[in-house]
Amino acid sequence: MRLLIVGSLDGQVGEASRMAMDRGAQVSQVGGIDQALAFLRDGKGADLVMIDVRLDVNRLMVGMTEERMATPVVAYGVGTDTQAAVRAIKAGAREYIPLPPDPELIAAVLEAVTEESHALVYKDPAMGALVRMAEQIAPSDASVLIVGESGTGKEIIARHIHRKSRRAQGRFIAVNCAAIPEALLESELFGHEKGAFTGAVARRLGKFEEANGGTLLLDEISEMDVRLQAKLLRVLQEREIDRVGGRQPIKVDVRILATSNRDMEAEVRAGHFREDLFFRLNVITLALPPLRKRPADIDLLADHFARKFADLNGVPYRPLADETRQSLRGHSWRGNVRELENTLHRAVLLSSGPRILPEAILLTGGDTANAPAGESTLTGSLVGRTVADVERDLIIDTLRHTLGNRTHAATILGISIRTLRNKLKQYTEEGIPVPAPGEGEATHP
Ligand SMILES: Nc1ncnc2c1ncn2[C@@H]1O[C@H](COP(=O)(O)OP(=O)(O)OP(=O)(O)O)[C@@H](O)[C@H]1O
Ligand SMILES: [Mg+2]
Image 1 (cartoon, rainbow, N blue to C red):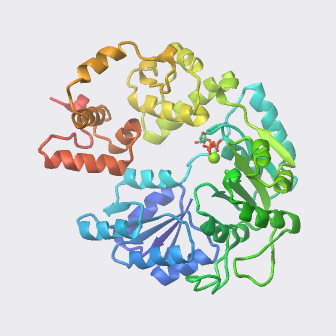
Image 2: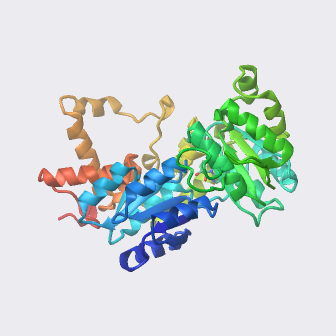
């Protein structure tokens, strides 16, 4: 996680940046907008930009848009300056971080843009075979296509291949082809020359150059536009790229990994994906089995996540009760490992006894075998109340349950910390008492 701070590092921002470093972020800093744009152009790379709200946030956002840079931006400033916060959000900043920094908020913002842990955990024979194959092909420079349902661990496997390759000391850069509009994606991948389009005020290096000597993961490659597919094919054949508006090709040494959760052969048949590119990428295919097909992993991953989230949240580790394991094994896990991870995160936060009991495991997705008994009585008691009423009670109850901890409550509720803060502010303004941090059931009179 590489963080670029735009503004001075004095005082409370310094504190925020130390919190980010404690969480494993690499922090760089520049003083102003022009230096920030220059930094981003140079392919030094940043996963998140944090800008002082007193600087011209709008100019940074306009500059980045014109130069087709897609790095997320958040603004920070002294908590009381709401006008500036509103201006920053209107200019396109994703979040506003009030100072003095709240460690939980910093953690939540960092977590929202990165994944903090890349450990690969498995024991099921189906996964064992796949990991062995991945490790066998890791040292070669062959392209690999990693396919599998959403949440099965495609990115985790891609990182594992990089770690086990000769390029392990180089960078691992991931680009999500589905999340970035076509014009931006071209510039993001290949960079551009000064004057390539209105707004291209200087040369900018793309992800291929940034990943030089390392590995580039093209996530959700099936979503790449056909014109860019042609450009990518050329890169794979020639091992050189053309910056947008560039006059001569540039040699790059990059290993390509790609992922897709679609049936790529069907995409080729339907004419959505170039067959020649498919063959180039598909030197080796790794097909991740869905979680329901690897029962031994459900148990092991559940233990892994129970430990991980106890650590992360500073609560005692509680082993899973046998009944809890049974109920996990019986679930269909349509969201695969990601769903299991979220389920265990909630369970860790909701548990209080010596073990994690089935009550703490809130399974979703219409699995009738696991539907909570007494659902109808619950709905019955809700009839006649407004949605806003029920929502408020749910939010305040959850907050009491987490002893006033906002981040935990937001995770359990499945809403962003910003949404939660806005709701709580509204309730306070309406005169409804809201549990303060550290205040909950346990401390209530
Ligand atoms: N074998 C594993 N061991 C530990 N954690 C895992 C494993 N597989 C997946 N995870 C975790 O589950 C989550 C989803 O994994 P990942 O992002 O790699 O899936 P994906 O297949 O790329 O999903 P999507 O298709 O939605 O992009 C991540 O938080 C990841 O850390
Ligand atoms: Mg992914």
